[in-house]
Image 1 (cartoon, rainbow, N blue to C red):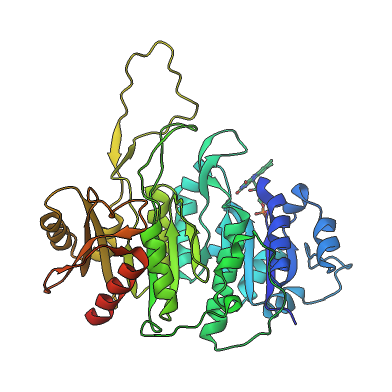
Image 2: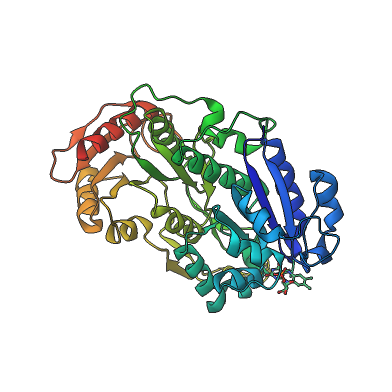
Length: 431
Ligand SMILES: Cc1cc2nc3c(=O)[nH]c(=O)nc-3n(C[C@H](O)[C@H](O)[C@H](O)COP(=O)(O)O)c2cc1C
């Protein structure tokens, strides 16, 4: 028996060919995949490619007499566990948001009771268009999940946000959602096959890993953790970043997973590997991390800002590599990036606990306490990164935990994994 049945909707963008890889990865993960394409999508990839690989009819036009199912939009949409759109054009997003059902894929969306996940891909101007953003906000409010596009060089040879997220990450997020939904419904759907080694989704399926919590005091928590450093583009080649390895954030993710929490990590640039059994989303720049956090926050009960997010980013990343010829000096104009932690704390609802980190070089506890008060946090983990055995890239840390209304807890040097458990102990006490 297949683990999940995914309806893969392909719309007419240049990234349509990547839907083939998404389909293959889903199949390797043990999913059954049925494919629906828009008419424009067939200009980019032949339905035959999907038909050959799935062994099933690929529906483009439900009016086509060759279509074996006379009420396909209902039957297709009712038989799937997830409707995943890769890539999603600005057009299909607009149609979904406005209830337009003038082809098979848009009719299927309207008839669908399964969760829907959309991975948009388009030119940056199309992506940033207020109409597109309005449609996305509307769909988010309707409960649709998004795999945000990333920044990079686009087919139109411009650099900006709009590139389809890596196929592995799309599949990882789709499996994470399917798993979470199945857990929510308390279902067991059989074991099926699992992805090959090296496919990152493998590490993100808690059920496959048989992860069981010994002390499950966090079983009712959904913990969202930002991890690693961010990377702010100067031009297509250069960027501003920092030394964060992601070790502390991943240690927290691992410890929280072991204590029964459902863990989602939004990772920037990391040199450490994410632990198995947690859902990993990527948000490489401060802006992308911000967007990813906003998309996930609604479900979270605890937010831990462990990422070293750049405070400033270039005002405008150059479209082409900046040349050094004729320039003895170069001035970069920087703008403040969004303060993710402060914004999460400011807009919190439903008892969300908000935890921050303060990596300082002097008056560590003083700065950390003022950060906690200014940003309205419940807890700050402060560390002096100049001390040996503390800070970036080290496997150990030396921290002081400050909690709202509580005494400062000075901890000795210990492995980051152990510190993670001490932090989680304090989170449990705050509950
Ligand atoms: C070569 C080419 C590439 C395109 N790439 C994209 C794209 O990446 N994203 C997008 O939203 N639209 C893209 N379009 C425009 C869509 O194909 C167009 O809006 C179409 O109506 C989408 O139809 P559909 O949503 O029904 O598939 C592209 C068009 C062409 C001709």
